[in-house]
Length: 471
Image (cartoon, rainbow, N blue to C red; front, side, top):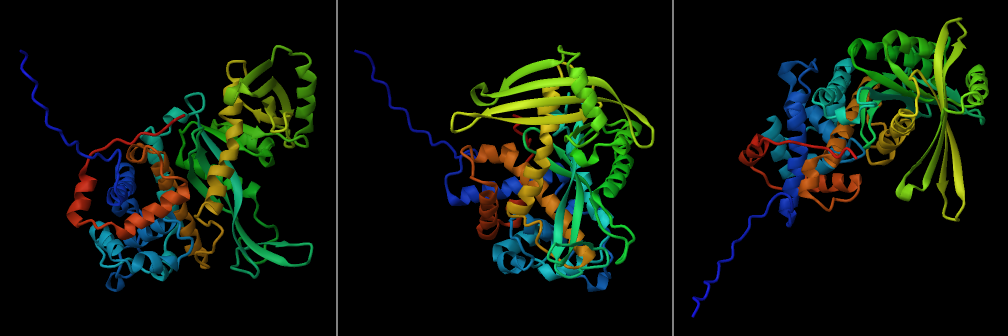
């Protein structure tokens, strides 16, 4: 008679971070994601602002500069949308104060007004250098390498957007515009250079504020003037970085071509029908003579999006300064199915200094020219309508308002790293909802989760890897 098998004891498996199933575990996973992301890439909040000089007198300092600027970053990470909300959500909360004490060595969370006063005396260039340095760190650590155009170029998209608008003059540097009803508005736009990627990253690389030199300028500042300043600064800061500029049609012209040729940059510029008439004429004439420069491609779900490409290389163009340029033009007719069964066709056209072939045209268009819209969507639209409230006047001081702008850029960069990083995907395989929902849950965790200094130190002592979805 066979010996009966002894019943095996049930083994209790430890709950892992990959599937937190209690509120406290989920909150800890969210705090880990935030703090370890900052620690892993940038050494932590305390080191992030080490290059910013503190001009305050030591005898009158209550809060370190690092604690003040970290408060500003968290203002945007948590999408609080106004400076006064710091007092309501962070300053009077015991768990929030305990985390500030453990991480930054201050007894309480700084007040938003204290942050504003201190920011007014900072060197704006030093704060901008923090933003630039963070994106440079991601480049050097090869986070963005899988997303390079043709496995070589970093796609840097430049575009302008509005930041602040006032009914009355805000400062001597305001730009002015008079509406049809006779009302004059005073505004402050910026020109941004962002590194964009196919998987949705849009990281600020450098910013140029568009502003007048004084209250009564002979000519107002504009995007084109800011573009020349920004490109010069970008070349000085990154002399050997392989850059491909993505630009809208405003910049299609000889000065841009000349500058890119001198700097060794590639470019892909949107071409509208009214731009560079001689180039359009050459393109339409030469497409009849080069029928081999034609490719059809199907993409999208079930390959229902049809793209029809035509291109011409070596188009000679002479600009207004009588400088000669050799250009290529790519045209894409894209047809997509609509809900009523019909198809909608959209025409895209770009001018570039790439040599276009059948093996490169799809990448050039879909991973180059078409990605310019990401600065609008993942960049400006998210920062304006995704809870960051870019157009809100966090400060009316002309220097402090720029500091807040850069703190917003830092928070947006960190938020993108969290949203797309493996820490969050591992802890929440089913996701946490929208980016706004992530910010809300992170704020809730920051305010409610009790963590001792020893627990925080142990959390930050863990060696990790963070990987990103490149699809």
